[in-house]
Image 1 (cartoon, rainbow, N blue to C red):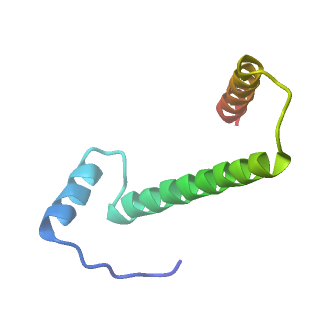
Image 2: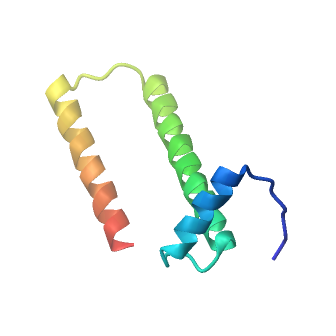
Length: 87
């Protein structure tokens, strides 16, 4: 595993140490790795959303009504949530 030294203000260092003391993290490195993982997941989600927007803009005009589009979006969102829960 690679090593990286990071300089933090004392207030941030205290925050990280407090998070470790909760017992959720074994040490400060675990906490920072969790933050990086979450940031990677958010970046991936943003990228997927942007791709969906780009695809939608490129697809042109639809004959579906607003209500039909909203229902389709709800179904897709529910399917995505269900998939994430089962993963």
